[in-house]
Image (cartoon, rainbow, N blue to C red; front, side, top):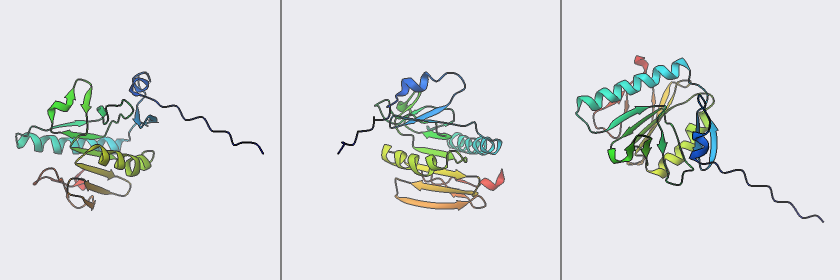
Length: 182
């Protein structure tokens, strides 16, 4: 009887591989595995711009110290060089995490806008990674289902909000965002 042969382990990629991709190619790195990203749709960009504007203006009106960044914006979740993401929106309140390359550590609030190609990534892989990394709040905005899933990891609460209802931002007491205004 022949012995079963072990399969070769898949290559483990690092941040250097992401930087070596070349112009115009965007990808994320989760636990050493590269996930290429398709260009966003017009609807995706409209939602992203609206959310960024609402959050940026809220922070500015409150004279807050947090910063809001829209993709492409580098987030290095771990120091091991094997996890790099570009959330659609990132809110960082600990400005010591920021440098010219991006955010080193977990943002306080991450928003991902689902596209057909990113559904599994946003709803499963990133949900787990963001929670484990210490993100306080994670929103999954799903244009196809016209809903926003809100995961407040800090308070261990989850909510589902249709675009026609305001979704509350857990990291701010008085901020809600309603997406049917786009």
